Image (cartoon, rainbow, N blue to C red; front, side, top):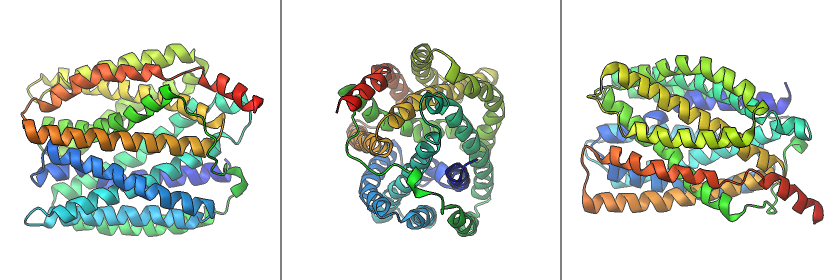
Length: 399
């Protein structure tokens, strides 16, 4: 394993554990403090604003090769997020200032974690040149998903337990100790050959179809996490420990299936796999809108497993296409432009959604109706140009 690969897996693993401890439960914590979908939507929009602001700082640090600073900033932002969330929990009355601050810090943390992680992943997948590297992005992303799953679920179990016991301060203590230990361990690994990382170049080519897909992708990612986590929370009778156990239980079932998929996806017809994944992903939103706490237990469990599988299958297929395209040109510029489009899209969408919910009000069926509306929109992922990489390479060769 190369130095970049070791740093990537260690960085992704420790942050997955930290996310599971408390940030995973953000929508649940907001709901428990009296915030509803209107405020959760506003929180997501402000998170996007924080991300875009932090992106300028991340790029400045990267240009100066301050990798240790980027690493420590990711842990500092995570601890600041945990502290602000705990402050929200302990506040007797809701504070707009703390709410806004927590959302912005959440965006800053997302930026320093996700952009760094994607940069390292792109560098790792370019360690072998040519089609050999391209043909293994699916398997490598699958390996990354497995790492995340293991550490994230460990964190979720711990976080669910401490939240259920109302011992949230321990989450800050554990997060601090883990962050300090991880930072010093990663610092030694951060001395990899920096020439393996592609410098930022504004020459990344993104056509209008990709712009549309990247714009809606941020919206779907937050709906998969924040809104779906809330639905699972309702299904488990508002019990955070049961929520954690449910999520971890799903992992055991999915891991067996997912292991086979990630080892074969690179060998399959990519067009067939991608379009099949999109259709099934749209179906997953229909199923989401159909499940309630009144659904028969065996039907409910089967539905949740199917939803998790279809979503994971789609994400594996889509991210393979994305990283293949990124690695075919200027990877980091491509990643940054995609992230900016996604964040801008979610800021606009969730700001409008928050305003609509504020004016029209909410009901018990709001989430279900929202999921059904997302189903046809998910089909827009089919606009992603699978042959873009071939045309793009020809364009670059002609320049």
